[in-house]
Length: 337
Image (cartoon, rainbow, N blue to C red; front, side, top):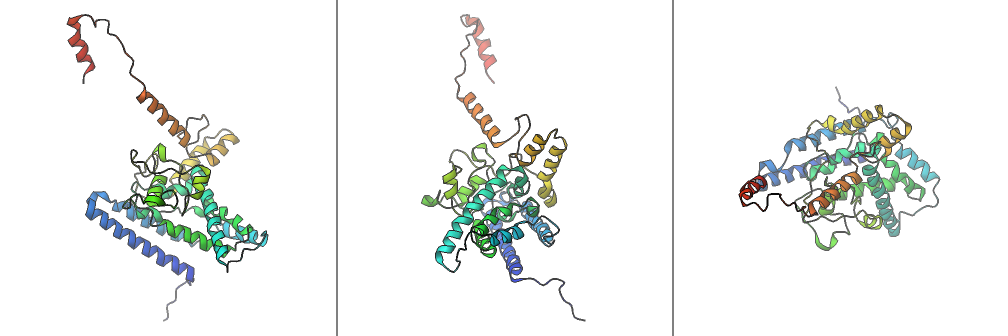
């Protein structure tokens, strides 16, 4: 009796499987190194295995045909290529240079939307759900990316004359580069900070501190963060707190993947107008109808108020009995701990 696999793997699929196994192996080695050098408690192995389970869920979801879910990016990109304004020759060096900067530009805006539009954040937050910054964060990705449809951001590249295959290849390169920057083992790297995306720059991106929210969106370079004013360097006086503003403590892979979608549905159920529906879906994470939600702007305003309060001089209050020597010990005792 001859046994045959029910599915014939393509070269791309086999390459993705091999890359996934290699990434998991390198990540495990990083975990062993951190555990030995900093102590067993310094590396959250439960979180590592949660990331592995998330990727198993991703593999199951990716096996669903695109027609079953909202996999609009590929057909939309193919249609855009048919309508292209011109054709960029990919057998030239300058064609790939243009592709690099074009991919980086659209990646910047896709990534920025992933943080500033809640519909996209519902998927992207999975990548930020870990409470430690290590290589496992690099491949902690959502299982609902096909539903949120963020990949349509790359379709306009096809309108500009880049083939869908070239766009996909360029995007994969962008993501592969980002694997090594998900670590706190590497510190600042001198002059390349602010030019390339580095572990320091990306640590800041993963920070939940109000000072570090919504910045450093670039994939491989910081060019468009510089242009659009979203580049923030890592500060020596503000230690990066990795994770979400409200940290997740669950180790359930499925709960993490569906966490923000559940929050979004609860908010939509209590919406009282189309304006509130649109605000909850397409406003920034934390948006609330009364303007009192925990958005990035709200958190920074709160931080600024706290800083002003801390910097303000304490009011001088003269005790009515200050001139009475007998009252001084009691007044001093009341002000102590």
